[in-house]
Length: 483
Image 1 (cartoon, helix red, strand yellow):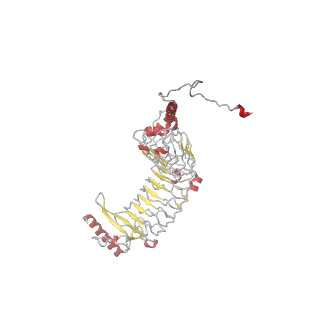
Image 2 (cartoon, rainbow, N blue to C red):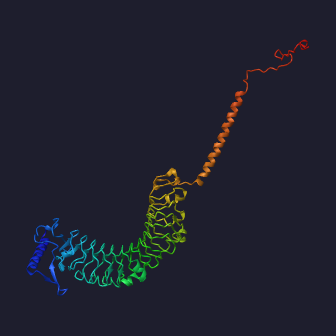
Image 3 (cartoon, helix red, strand yellow):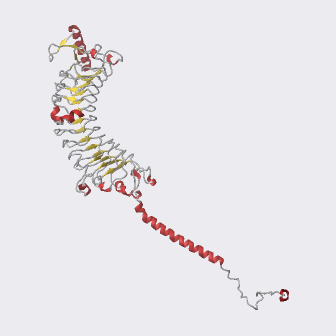
């Protein structure tokens, strides 16, 4: 154990001794409130760490040196069965504490913590029903807050007061049905917001207001997760800094109010029968479009992916009813080779596609990965163009014709991609040759039969006449006998 860590343990021990003598320490930020010294860790024995013993009353507290050489404390209280009666007033965290994990306990109330260096706080998987106003005011340097999988129903305006340095907050898996106006206005540095698995559909559908303007979210927000929120529409027009939007498994029917700077969009699991031309606005910076597990998606219509010049990854995995991709899905300008596309990865795993039109060849010129595993692919002449694309790695096997069944698409030679129409002239020539051969054989057979029944050359034929000894003799009956 180096000197810095040893010194830190000794300082902690001195702090505990002073706390035992004075019993309580006042907090300057909150007047008239008494704070007990933290009893999460035990630093009475600095040369060993007794907090790693299972079954003791302390959490697992580890001390490490930071990049600056100062000790940093990480406290892990996960599954330590800490209830609300464990906390006594404000909990003073040990000096240098940067991470505290209180997940998977029996907490019904957010504990009041005091730690000027705390950066990461995990309160997930508890039974918390509400976030009191200004409860995090004494951990103002907090950067990541996880309160997922609790029972929170309402997020008040002052719940996040004091968290001006907060960059990520996870509120997923709660029962939030209402968010008060400007609830996130105090989180000026917020970049990642997760509201997935909350019943927010009625709330947003009723207000129809811009999410940024109503909730007080700043333009620094880069990642928004709102999956399984029962949404039918969402207004993100003011999100000029938004880069990733995860909106899957909602009841979305249209999306016309998305920011132009969006680079990643996940719409998996939405009940869309076909992707029309005007479903997505012109997202000039969109690079990844995720359309996985679309239960009733049957077709990508003409111009459905038009206006997405930077689209490099399209994922349709698990959309088992998808059977048609229109030849002009990227627009006619692409087919005419007037516009370049950036598509490099196409995932069609588990779809119902049997073929792809050759008009897509210009859109697939930069394609590097094609995943067609689990598709009933017909490897005939209509897919020969796909096999001939350079630098393309294909994952999947052919289903038809029977001659190529279960063969990997990438191992089949281009000349083996044949159609019946192309093979017709071969069959015609073969049939003609067979007919000629049959005629020749029949002629030879007739010739042999005739030759076999003809007399041999040494046999002499004699004429039978009246004077010939071989002439027919007629014996007439005795006329007397007839009398």
